[in-house]
Length: 228
Image (cartoon, rainbow, N blue to C red; front, side):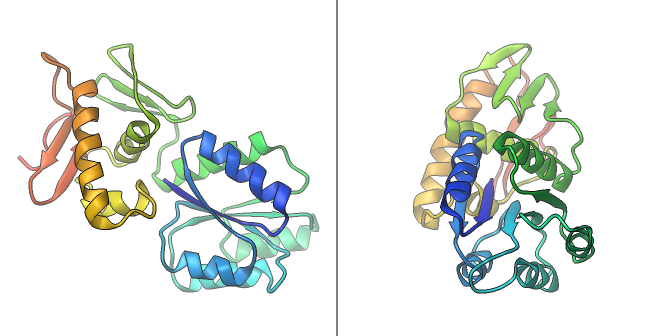
């Protein structure tokens, strides 16, 4: 899942990116409003972390553009401005959260996880599909109580599917959100390989199949094949 950090102050930008990468997100950064808009219009982000005081524009203007374009990214404002009027303005303009500097990186990461859960209408950090548990916060998955030994790419793909459990997910969605900037042809091959590895770990011999290939459509993580 992709996150955009819009922050001109290097130490905060790097700290946020490093922490979110540890959580398994793909993170892009922008140092000003112009760069932020360039990236917002070419990529789909689950969450945009937006500083209000940018060198070339106000974060409020970026937020206004995001909402006017009806982009569904969650937006978390980060700023040293703790005036109540600024908070009210940001929330009224469509921000989903507001965090005042200085803040703990762990708190920012927790708020991002909460925004991702809210985006997919999931209250718990553990997504369950039959006897499979995907612990988004812990970064682990279990089936029948046994931990699955997943790589970072495998877990990122499983998390993406888990938030959409029961739905058919198109390959183009996976290209956009899970595999970052790879070209579609290369990403298609990567998805096929990773999906095969993931299926072997989830759907072991004798276990009920949960990861389904819906030919011509995409993939689904579900108790039953939704294409049937």
